[in-house]
Length: 412
Ligand code: SF4
Image (tube, rainbow, N blue to C red; front, side, top):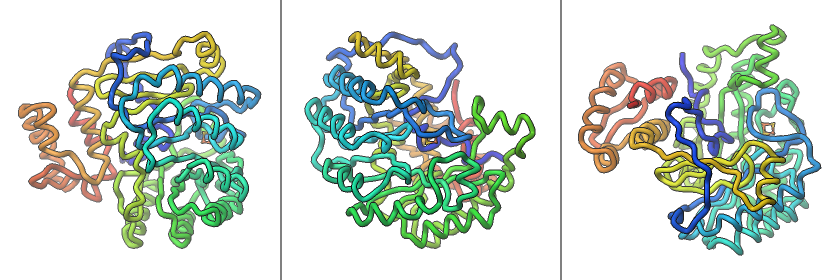
């Protein structure tokens, strides 16, 4: 059974999906005024963590001696790329890694650079990814005073044994306490990440985690099934037989429980892994899924410009050196019409809104609309997709197969 597991994880939002090399044409990136586009979001990648979680394959380092140099380099990159944005910035997202590990004064340094070089909308959404062990009354107050107005908190579980199993740096007590701390500091807009379906977790324990989040009235939930990525400690341990493999059947039951409980408690399942109370949807992530262009700064950060994607190198030292030498450590690729259509199909199907007929026809023509119409019909007949006058949405049962259905509709 294919699950929403394969869907994009919170931190992969800014991570370009790997494509076969033959489809890629790589170019060295030059920031010039002719590249200026109507970008509306900025992503800042902070590539440091206290500990390496066993399941994680994001770009980060646990060596913290380059923190200050990294912040300076990110500020320089923002300055170097300031001519790429022609419109006001609606969302800023500090992701990683662990942005909350930075001293608040470093976050402020980056925000000041952003304000000096870009036109940031006065009602922009400013999200900081934070781990529970970094959240205290003092840091929360400081983040608030500098304009951060939303958190994405890496809670993952409210049970200590799961946090230990994942090698997280925080405790279950800190998972609980951080929520009251940010509320006391005046933050009402926040999300927590939760992971389900690890071999160490029962369905009952997952439901207990969900119930805790619901009782705490958490306004936004990002819930991901545990995935086993290559080159992670988890992958190695499973390979060596030290821990049992992930059971997809169990993950399917957990996902079903999530859909059921969330609906019962007023959460809008607006994207396959994201659920929000009304008005608390992530503006930044919604922009990604709507294909709004964005600029990504910091090592391994990706940018998207409608028909072009670029990405910085995934090396902290290489990134810092290149920026210090005045070169953007960045490559880019031109997206074909098919690439853009496939991306639309994948992201639209993941969202509540689904694939829209008018978007398909306006952007890719009647022929593409007719092709999708024909190829999606078997899923409609199997009850995995709901067809309407405006387009197609996944049904509850279809959400288990989102990736597989999207892949069937891809064009090469
Ligand atoms: S804190 Fe986040 S980015 Fe860092 S290792 Fe853990 S999952 Fe990965």
